[in-house]
Amino acid sequence: MMRAAVYGYGRAGASLARTLPRAGVQVVAVGARGEPARSRAAADHPGAHIFTDIGSQAWRDVDVLFLAVTDRSVSDVARALATTEIPRAVVHLAGSRGLAALEPLEGLSALAMFHPLASLDGHGPIPSGTVVGIETVDLALASRLEALAQAAGLLPWTLRPGQAVRYHAAATIAANHPVALFDVALQLLDDVGVRAGDARRGLARLLRSVADNLEQRPPAEALTGAVARGDIDTVHAHLRAVAHRPDAHALYRALSTRLLPVAGLDHETEDALLRLLASGGD
Ligand SMILES: NC(=O)c1ccc[n+]([C@@H]2O[C@H](COP(=O)([O-])OP(=O)(O)OC[C@H]3O[C@@H](n4cnc5c(N)ncnc54)[C@H](OP(=O)(O)O)[C@@H]3O)[C@@H](O)[C@H]2O)c1
Image (cartoon, rainbow, N blue to C red; front, side, top):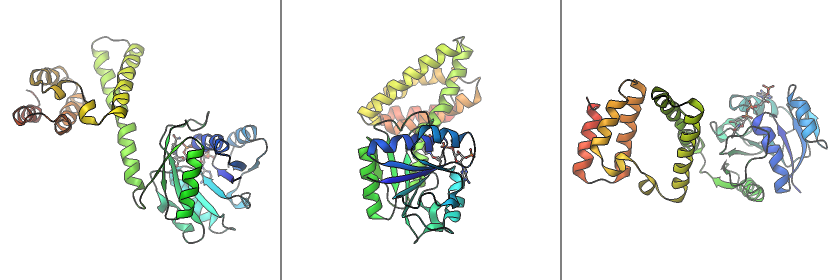
């Protein structure tokens, strides 16, 4: 049975530590530098050794030490680890940093990034079916992490070395940017008098149906709406209807323009829409 330690008991660390047993991995040590994280770790993992300091070497006998500290702290913790007895494998969760964050340990240990593509709150395990981006140049560690992910019901994506930050930017565009669009749409619904709770519920359902469509078919087939239909009059009416909110107007123009090649319209309609969107619809 693989033995693991998790250092950093925030949202991702807690979710990971709750997930590892699902893959038959024993969590033998959990580290958190402060309260209340340490007490929470002790309550959640009664058999595990709870430690505070990364220098305590509580991971001495583990196969993998997971670092679930904040993105900007990964390199600091790796530097601190480099001055201790080195763990056999060190794996961090910071998708925005990639493997490079463990540079202080290069050549000293097997290293990897293991990034769950989900929003984790620490209250439960990583949901089954979640993609995990893995970046490593160590083939043996890659297979162990892939096997671990599969055994935990996760979907491993092994990235080419050096690609993690681009992968993370893609995830940010898909996961965070719709929140900005959602917020703009809520303002427009507020303008027409829809109550905030109703607006949130209605738009979330709409967004979920789009996500379901996009999982089933490529964007060109999943796209619906005025641009997909080449409906120039409706796009024109929309531009006029949102002109009182400059951010909504700018987003509508930019994103509709980006949808044109997705929609696969005939050239004449595409050109007409392109001109309309470029003019802003005045
Ligand atoms: N949450 C997610 O949805 C999610 C998903 C995928 C990946 N991740 C990645 O997981 C990592 C952790 O994120 P998180 O969401 O769990 O953040 P978080 O809830 O803020 O937890 C981070 C933990 O790291 C600890 N920490 C920070 N700097 C430290 C240091 N120098 N030494 C020791 N402990 C330190 C913090 O301790 P203090 O409380 O004492 O500051 C905190 O307990 C990040 O790399 C993040 O990108 C998160």
